Length: 322
Image (cartoon, rainbow, N blue to C red; front, top):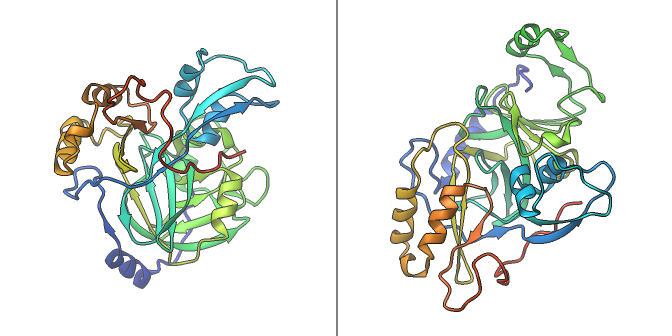
């Protein structure tokens, strides 16, 4: 995390707050949860390369290590072999909202970037650990900086001291800088979106509150973001989508203990949208129980095809990342 004394773009923040109409439920808010119309990702085979691990592959493709291991019948401690083929499923539901900008759903560990009314990118991210959580709220991108200097905040210096590490006050640009090569500072002082020198940490809760992207992803996003771009951080464990007549459900763990009960929320949502008759309720209940973070097709079947096995995808998956 970078705690530099940035000037908050107050006027832009006010404009962003007025412009955004968010149909998202986070924490104890009373905002309305709505059904999305977009699912990204898909199913594909990945051939293991030298240096790959389950953790690293999961980090790059937005899949938890345990889900990736389970889908391939492997133990978590499995050592992969070069040329080995893995089945990867990384479907995710894009939160429904109005307006362009960045939305980061904390339980989903994903950053979505909307531009000109279209979803342009969906990136896996690392977020704050449970004892140092990433905050929720509406902000703007206040700072764009390449090759940033990390001014180590006092709180992290104290953590270094407690852990017996060398206490650093400032880290210059270079291979040892945990911010990587790009910094997008939020108007909420001290927090930002940045790169990393530890790519395998992506899709985990390991930061001091900041949002960490793979170096390739932050470089791509950096080129498309301007100062004043609206951004919002939300906490939404449960997402539902309806695409081409199919119903998808995605559920994540309650990492910050902010949404303990979601079954009633799911029931209310599907009934409000008149989807009850289209849903395989036992399958939906199982997905809510598992909380594996993958968007699953819960459409009631009239035939004999098992759910989430041989169905064709009714959406256009994004190209898997290398």
